[in-house]
Length: 223
Image (tube, rainbow, N blue to C red):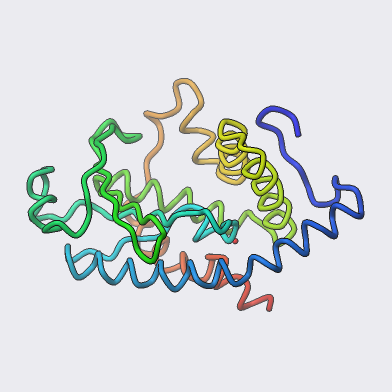
């Protein structure tokens, strides 16, 4: 694997390809368990804040390992625009981690908690950042093939097993950049300010996300 490159399933030696496929199938129980926890976490966040968050990351893309956490994104509640408001709304259910600027320059706030030994990250983001994130995850979900998921999960497993955290992060980033033209434009110099999610397209985008998720996509073929 080259720096920020890509590995296809056909690039692997036939014996390793068989190992990768077997490993991915064996991780099916892990993905199923994470999906169950993800749905419970979504419901809990909706109960706490009034907004149902959307899953992001490997638990949604179908590329999770047993060590993977759950990433959820939610628009900032209308009645709770500040960090102090969010703390009060969550009422100790999740711990504050950090605040960082999002793609539009507005602050996004990260909270987390542990559910059945799995970390759940709750990202509260401004509306524009939220729709931008949904666009990216939509592109990734529709772009990944089953073969992509097998190869990507296998390489993640190898990097994680040897403790290469930097390589692990770069490999995940490589997948996101390969699958999402919106994300590629976002990181390209001079392009960030040109990214906008059309307001008239938000409803249709949200409606299409479930069928374009790995679970929904596999139901048509069966991350």
